[in-house]
Image (tube, rainbow, N blue to C red; front, side, top):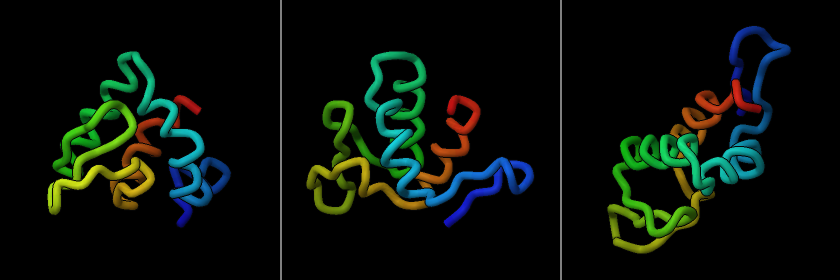
Amino acid sequence: MNIYIDKQPNMINFNDAFFNSYAIPFVKADNNIGATIRNSISKIEDVEFQGKDRIISKYNGYPLNLTELSTGCKTIINVLLSTTF
């Protein structure tokens, strides 16, 4: 999936790979950006964090990696962070 931010030159290719490579370090960061992203993920997915890099599934209580977030959540985080990259 490609995300067009404005015009075609300003786009995110391969949404999931972009999130896994570039957004996850921001999520794990000990700063305001990391805290804001974790808060956004918690609200979007209705999950709780276990540490900074794992979430607890609301369906079965199992811990999940951030790579297992929904594509919609990854898309929102990528767009929010697009000005940072």
